[in-house]
Amino acid sequence: MQSLQLLACPPEIQLGKFPVFVHAPDELALDFDNFRSALVGSFRTELTAEQLHCLELIGRTFEEMNKNCFSPEGVTHSSEWQRIRELAAEALKAFGWPLDDPPRRDHEFVPGGPHKKYS
Image (tube, rainbow, N blue to C red; front, side):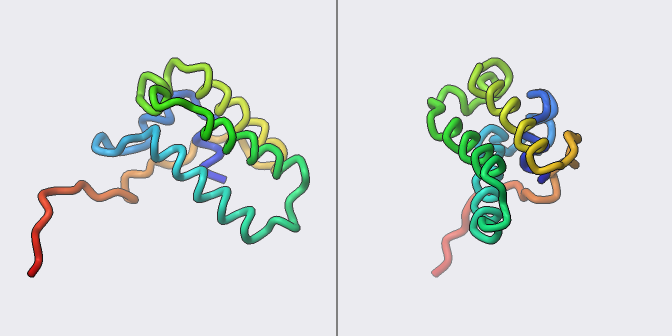
């Protein structure tokens, strides 16, 4: 649910939910893909045709985006990301879930550093 909620948020909220060292556009798309795969994989027979269609449209929109959309500027200004926000709001409605501002995601990420070679 929180994946869809975040996708439905305005761009400044979407980008502000991640630590500065995280590439937020990629994480937004990856998080949705993980959510959709788990939900559909586990509960396909319990989902309505409308719910499945909403998830499919969001997934297809991500697949059709060009690489320029996967930048903070793309999230903020592209019509593709605006379409994602609209589709996510429609999906939340189809599931009967609230259009809400989900929590920050800082605790899910660890900054990287130089890699050590192990022998």
